[in-house]
Image (cartoon, rainbow, N blue to C red; front, side):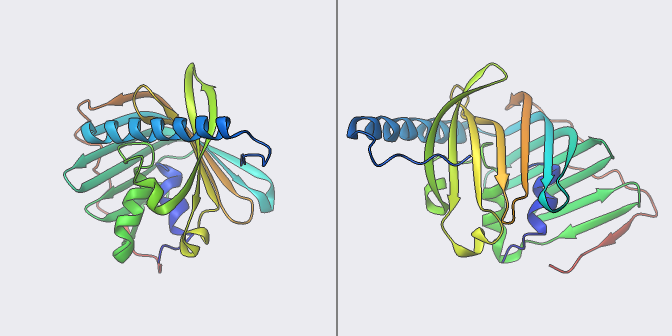
Length: 239
């Protein structure tokens, strides 16, 4: 089981509006939306076949409803797929320095301020976690249909990109306990996400914006390495 506390810590550093068709919508418009969704999923499938690496600048806004507060983090994210293996990393530089790495089936969150690394093992949920981390970056479009109800919400301009909006609603009750729904803004030309918004039960949400996206370029050798000290404490919080 993936605990909700684990999701924000992995995706918060990385990574990681509901629109319904009116009953009065015409069959023609429904077919148009269905065709548009199929086209976007096909574009994501095609991008996934040639995907090896990606890196991008990240701006992430975390809204916490109980205190009505938004925290903004900035940094860079890295993705790499080697066969069936998936690695992901985020180097957060603002407001506080933090590094998150998911590699070899393990997540590590390093907080230099307290010189501590929190380690998480997804266990039986590994495949689910990796599919979650690759949302919009190397993940297959049609593979989403196995886990989510997917709706096409039209297009929206994001930093000059006429992005296709997809709404993902988890099918399983287990996943619904952690994530209410996800909005992806997909660049149809490259089949990757330029923006993601994740809504959590209770009203919290996280909005991640990606810029200067580079696909299949050489990544820094240090992208998936933690820069710890000789006194760094490694702990495994109860999951």
